[in-house]
Length: 262
Image (cartoon, rainbow, N blue to C red; front, side):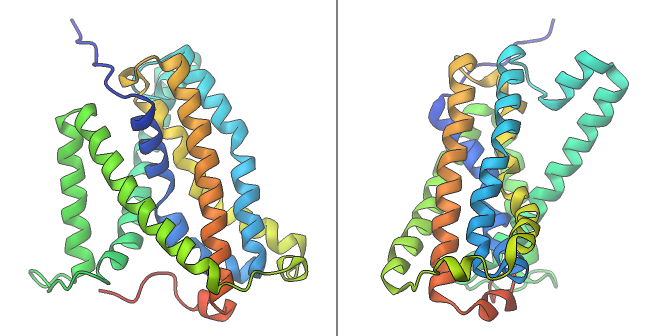
């Protein structure tokens, strides 16, 4: 008989997992690409993308509360369309998460190496071997259980948000905020092109549905966690991008997609 998973994840853990799934490669890499399409208008692009993902978050929250079981997308499609299509969706989701995780590590590790002086190991650049080591560490923690994963996620998200808040708050006094003319300089087409590009930065909000079976009081915690984390992340993205645009020339932002490290 299958053993039921323990419901160890509260609202704080759910929000931490959701925010952690969103805040990553998107905010660290995509502004350099979005600015090429929208210029300063990428501030609006991040705000619009956050609004556009609300229907997806509400739909996923409804499904997760109706079927609070581990598996997320696989469970929903398997129940409605059969095991074959459910398996296809499950494998596709697994690969999507694997690639997104790899992108987050490749995009985020160079920033860590700005403060960590690490040597090459076995001929691998610091960015490569450190990213692999972090991936193995995270896999190991996930194997230990949801409670340990939730605690680590809370700690990681707290450190990451503290760093981003320090950057944003420290950058506000030095920022020259763009006016309406600058925001709309590239026109609606440029803003919507950038919106499509940065939309992926919010995709992680729905991933909490995959661990719905481990969430305590899922009817209340999952919707609150999804909408709360989405609102917080949207505001954070807009503030960070506004500061970036305010303190750096647009040409400088577009010049590099990752930190000068590794």
